[in-house]
Image (cartoon, rainbow, N blue to C red; front, side, top):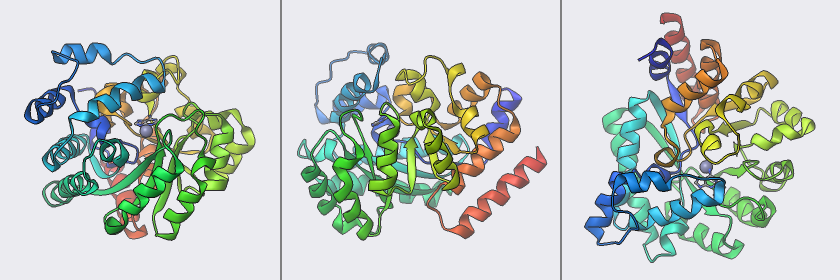
Length: 337
Ligand code: ADE
Ligand code: ZN
């Protein structure tokens, strides 16, 4: 392990942008397919890996939704979530706020309760056994209708206490944030935090909509905001957190190569950027690997990494005393290494 990799692993970090369905590893996909007697169009783990070549977001989403079909029982959701939490704790995460896509499952006849009970059980056990705190964010699939999102929000009503917030994901272009303005207003009334994917493939106008119409508390991706300097100024002024996903951006061709990644520029502009893995089983790396890859590609230094780790707690939905405690822990770690 290089010095920098060891430094990254030991650095207290939060992960704020990770889709649980995107943590489903090929080996787990086979195991769940077998125990649930579901056919999948792959024979070996190598077949699966060979299929994970994407030229854009939709290429990936098609295969990601197909993979999620092996998730049937509460045990499947528990096991998938536990495996991720174990893995990210090994990467030095102290806190995670994870996404799930209920509609991917309820549209196949899986009960909302099955999905959420499995996930919440794993989050509780990780808190007890690993000391890893966690929050759960329910995403609406933006390629589906506003009505379907409202129906999902209704199904979530009994779980208001265990859900931290709502998000917006799936195919971005052609499905602007404005489509979900009323659903987000209703979610805010119920006390949910609000986040949305915007500016991954979509134009800066979608980021404006996410801010002005959805009234988001945090921006997922946001890469294309850099095309609009007034928007950048606003994001800096409002201290909006961007959950940036370097290996995802590389795999989905949002950037041609990691050396072109805008993360370093984002920091230099004063944006509150964070590093996250998005869909680690599909994009070739968990949290620490995202830090390491971008550190190498952009020649980041320890001070950048400390800022990024601090941003991950500043951008979290933890309460202020917890955030302060994590920032103090980062300072202590930085002073000791
Ligand atoms: N769902 C899972 N990962 C996603 C991403 N990067 N963008 C949009 N929707 C997603
Ligand atoms: Zn995402």
